[in-house]
Amino acid sequence: MKIISTPIELKEYFKNSNKTLGFVPTMGALHEGHITLIKEARKANEIVVVSIFVNPTQFLKGEDLDKYPRKDDADKKICELSGVDVLFLPEAASIYSDDEVSILAPKVRGFVLEGFSRPGHFNGVLTVVMKLLNIVNPTRAYFGKKDAQQLNLISLMVKQFFMSVEVIGVDTVRENDGLALSSRNIYLTVKERQEALKISASLQCAAKMLTQKIVNSQVIIQKMREHLAPLEIFYVEILNRDFEIIKEVELANSIILVEVKVGKTRLIDNIWL
Ligand code: PAF
Image (cartoon, rainbow, N blue to C red):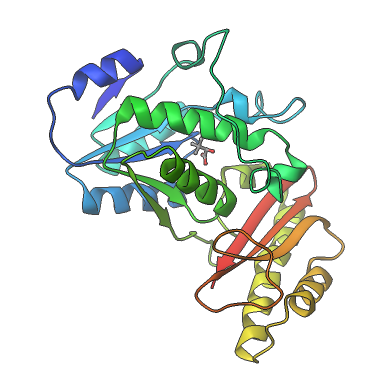
């Protein structure tokens, strides 16, 4: 596995390549969810590139940038064992400069749900993803469906900026007890981890209601909120795949999304229907 740490070097490395390239951008602290993204990239592409960059612009003031888990050695091992060809590990100084052109998240879709509780977060995500896609120039880029809003906004950016990369959403990986894998799970105490199971339980409850032909969004949301109590709820929402609020669940076109705080840790989860 080749390790590259500057955009110039990476561009140079792939200058004459005409191989298909699958790209998995990450912020490190890799877990089984990331490994699944890498596996998907491995299946469909000749070359696989993973980036690890804890992007400062997507953290708001007071968020966990300094405390964000960093596991460089373990991450390198995971990439090597997963068959990654190139690991891109840039420093912030090679990605950002003092006076930057801005990429702004759309005013509606970028500032609801997670974008409402973290205003500006998606400006940072879209900016760094635009930069990384331009540096790596992949055939396909892989993102987890757990970050549904992020996936939706990146797909929108790629479409609206006429970029040629194919954006692939990959299913969420869960622990046996249902907890969605997240780099932030390591912040949870044993008790909080137990409380966090309410999240997947609330989504399972919604899925069960659908099998009972209950499709009214408000009825489902209310039941989910009861399941999530007493956790602090940021949102429970039912949207179509265009991220518009819908009154009734439309099968094969809906996402049920949750964001809660468990202890000091924000956790998101969702199911795609
Ligand atoms: O999902 C993440 O890990 C990050 O938001 C991403 C896409 C790597 C951008 O920093």
